[in-house]
Image (cartoon, rainbow, N blue to C red; front, top):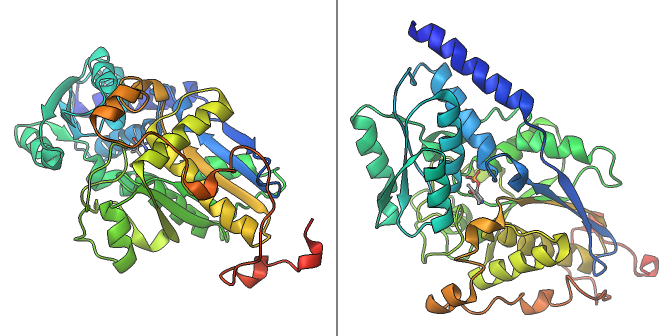
Length: 372
Ligand SMILES: *Cc1c(COP(=O)(O)O)cnc(C)c1O
């Protein structure tokens, strides 16, 4: 079989997979504490491989194939904190190609087991900062480097093709506040935020994009001063986001705001989601949810109404032995999960708000006598 014939078969496999897959749900959440704000959560855990990386892995395979970089029988390699590796292992198996995941040794054991169950090989490195170098080492020996950190932002078709932004906005179409005030996502490769930010502009919407990041991360620091050389001032236990360096796929210009979230708050957010949705999601979903609540609290204080769309990034079962384990948190000296004090009421009883802060944008400030 010629390489082109093999390629045509691989493309057909990917098209068939896409046709078999359904879209992910957009869950609506109404919180009594925010009567004028509707929350929507895009459930990316419902992909066949359990995270938003299912979309990315499909795009990276398409990109490698269509650029003539991936050939019959070639080994595939990538550096990953786990979610991408699981999705890539799944697509590699679909195409009948060997797969090597370079992962930090501290990655949640469940994710490592998932990659192995899909036939992937895990190359575990002690220092998370060396994963890129190690992936390149494999590439020099003949593997095709899918390079999620280098290519996520350009491999994704941001104008359409059912990218995450097109999907969520189409699902919002019939809602009362169809044009969200905010979309909130995390940033690992930066691919999701780049795709959403570009698509909002492409569609001419006023929706603002907020990136929720672990406190002290490189992206949060770099975004403020547009410094691509920024590094993280501390580590995080939230996998998938909170990168040690500003990854090449972060597009600073399409992000309107960055909210930094303490790990203990992210974990509390993750538990709050379980209480509200009856299902477990991962740590970065908790980070996003805390940022959604912070934005909602600001909107409420300004008397604004509207909608906020957040992301549920991956399945919670992956973290049963880590983030969901009180003993694991204790061993690492992480404070017991607790919501930030100012959000204490957010997921429970309704409250009324005080004076309109002077920071409220005038277009959403309401006269006092219109308040209930
Ligand atoms: C990758 C990832 C993110 C961030 O998405 P990017 O598109 O890579 O920026 C958030 N949460 C989880 C669980 C992830 O795996």
